[in-house]
Length: 65
Image (cartoon, rainbow, N blue to C red; front, side, top):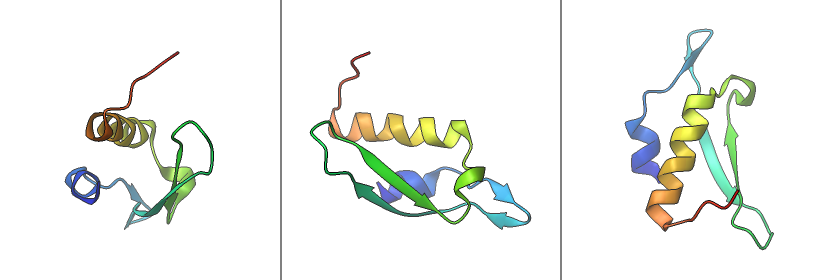
């Protein structure tokens, strides 16, 4: 996943890049991940959707809504 995260241009907040610090898998039955960032309130919807789609394609997750 690091390659995918680095391939996306980081959004800026007050002159600093908003970066993903680490990712933690939550202890639940359904695969759930929590992303930690230096400015979590500034992570845009486009970045979160990009990462979500990359995770789905990388691990072959299916979407059930």
